[in-house]
Length: 509
Image (spheres, rainbow, N blue to C red):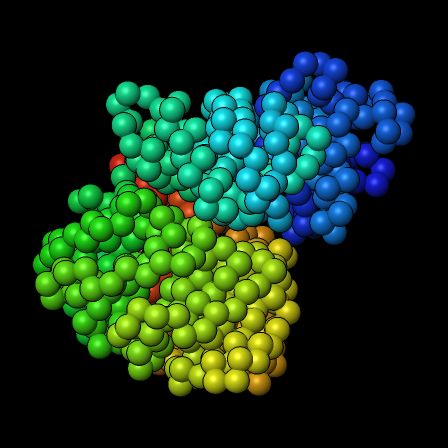
C-alpha cells in the first residue's frame, strides 16, 4: 500500500503490519489541473507543497493537524497504468477505507461552513453536492469508522455522525436511488452487507450456523437473514437474537431452528443486540440513534431510549439487569432499565466501538477507534486507560465470566490483561482485523473472529493457539459461546456464494 508523506509529499510503500495510521480522502474527480496523478507525484511535477492543488495540499495539512503522518488518495497512490495493481486496489478499497484512522470527504462544490453555524444554504448546498452522485459514495460513507466533511476551502462542515448531516445525507442518497429500491435504508444496508463481503455486487443472503459440541450442524439459519452483525444467546440458550437484518431483530428458537419472533420497530439498520440477564428483555441499537427494548415472551415494545447522536455501535446489560450501557458516536451512556432515564454519561475523544461489563458490574470497559481500552468505575466515575497494541482501533472487548481477565481485539492483534490491568499476553502478529472476541463459559478459551475469514481459539492461560477454524469465505463479524459451553456454537459471516461454508466455534473443541 502506497501512502503520501504529509511533510515531503512523496510516496512511501508499506506492507501488512508495517502500515502506519493514515487518513484517506473521499472526493469527486475534477479536471486534470485539480488532480495529481501517480506520475505527477513520482516525478515531482510540482515543486514544493505550495504548488500542489488545494485538494492534495489541504488533505495533507489536515492530516498533519490531526497528528497523522500519511494520507491515501486514489488518484496518485495507485498506478492505473498497471492493470494488475489497479484490480488489486479495487478489491482492497473497502478495507483501506475501513482501516483508515479517519476519512476526509472533500466536497469541492460546497462553500458553506460548519453545520453548527445554522447557515440557511446548508441544506440545499450539502444535499446537492455532486459527491452524493458517485458510484463509490455509499462504500466510502459506510466503511470508515470516522468521516469528516470539508467544504471547497477545507473548512470543517461536520462529522457523518452529526444528526443533521445524517438526515441530509439520507435525503441526498434517497434522491439518487433507483425506483426498485424505494427505501433509503434498504439501499444503504444492501451496500454495507455487500461491502463487508468485499464485493460490489447486489447483496447476497447470509447464514448463521448452529452446531452441537461434536461439530455436527443442527441448523443453518438463512430465512430473512441479511448480513447479520451481532448475535446473542438468551441466558438459557434457547433463543438466539440476530441484528443487521435491515430494521429487524430476529429471534430464533434453538431447538427447531425456526424464527419465533421478528421485532420491527426500528426505522433503520439494527447493529447490536443483547438479552437481559433474566432473559425477559432483548435490547437492540440501530443507526436511527435509538435503543429499543422488547419483552421476549410477547414481543411488545417496552421502551425506546433516545439521546444519542448517530449510530448505536454497542450495548450491554449490567449483570443485575438494572442498567443498560450503550455506545454511540463519542458517548457512552448508562440507563436505568426500569425507567428509561440516563443514570450517567461519559464523553470520549474517539468513536465508541464496543462495551462490556465486568461480572460484578462495577466496571464498564469500552474500546474505540484508538489503541486504548477505557475502564469506567461506575461507582466513582473514575476512568482508567489501558494502551492496547492494536494499531488504531479496538473493535471489541470482553471480560471473562470468572472476572479474572479482560480481552480486546483490534487491528492485527488480541491482548489479554488481568484484573489489575497487567498484560498477560499479546498476539500482535495476526496481520488481520479482529472484529469480535468471546470467552468460553469456563473462561479457559478465548475465541476471535477476523477479516482473514477464520475463527481462532486461544488458551487463556498460556496464549497458545488451540484451534484455527477455516472454511469461511467472508469476514467474521461476530462469535459467541452458548451459555452451557457445549450444546451449541455459532459462526457468522456474509455469504459470497452458495458453495461457501460456515465453520462454527464451540465451547468444547
